[in-house]
Length: 201
Image (cartoon, rainbow, N blue to C red; front, side, top):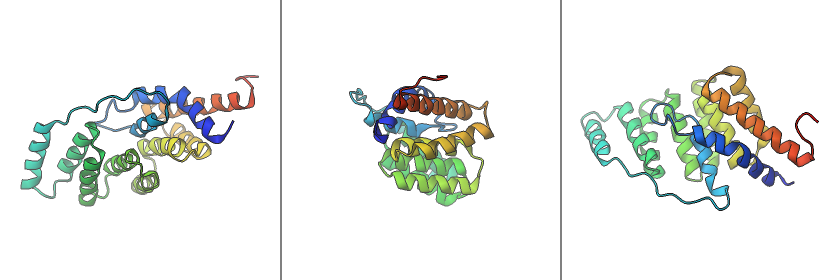
């Protein structure tokens, strides 16, 4: 089995699990959103219409920003609002603004990296995640996202596995740690399929 096929096998086994957890707390954490970007790789995946943009929220936040141009939190919320509507290019604009205003916020930096990945900028996403980890080397949300991008964006399962193991070591009982463990189980299962063995054999 080629490396690319292993990635699709992993996607089949752990993608659904990760995706089920993925954007549940988007407004508060944006925990593993990059997993959803692997969706185009799943053959036959049904295309769904993006959620509608919350225009009222956009207008309210734009008013806040107009009155307080240095409000990094409002810029971040505006980025989140566009992200939730799957308008990733617009989300990038406001995440970049938030990061420029508050460069020490690892969540905003990671949100920006996630949006880069959604727009096909895999390398730029990984660079942004490194920036997030410079701010907070133990930021498990960033690390989990980095692993997903390495696996699905770069087909680097070894790199993804290493990052996910770090997440489990740092925070085994957190949602990030649990998701990383499931992803590692998916990689292990794919490896067994590739070698023709079964777990425990």
